[in-house]
Image (cartoon, rainbow, N blue to C red; front, side, top):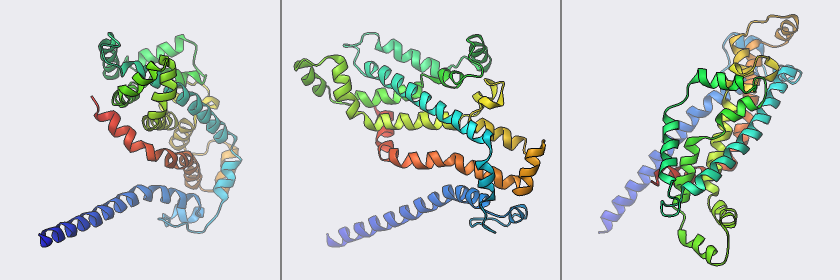
Length: 295
């Protein structure tokens, strides 16, 4: 009996050690590109040109960041992305929660629930297509406005289904007790459902944030002027056209290598995600697993 428990304990410890090592290795693989970009941005242009930079800066210098700090186009694009994230995440989260709550009720309480869910699934699978979306945004006069980046994706279907399934697993007795005390639907939603749904709300908020922050293609097709580009579109345009085409860019290139400039801007783009994710990470696993599994 004791030998069986002992062997089981040894097996559990071995599994824990191996699992920990695998997670550390996976984390290192994910961190290496970020560390490399940071090292390139802090390295001397000669070392970068000679491909001598790996995980540590070579010839430490802040020249690239000084050049980026003076680039009005970068900070303008950064401001557009911040505005997009604030408006987009707010609209996405509010519409997701407001739509998921009634759909989480049974058909006895919401008879048309099944039809709305099927409509959501249908539009999630079958999209209108790029050209119809382009024509719609153009006819609405949204080109070169922040709304062209926010409104087409205002209702994220996957987030609604995730949030709906999470709310379905909340005990009905809590709302029933509040209803007996005279609480209305709106009061029950604000005071009971929302506080209990913090994990899934944090999860869909993170999804919306990443979607808006990382998106670049819509900024390219819905904007005719580069001054309205969000940050990712600006960076994509910068990398795809990395050759210096005017006098000011040529002067900047003399001060700092193009690759170091690109690395500095890429790392500054990563900072908001690196700073925000740890605060939402504790909710992420619970919100995602419960919302995805519940049928």
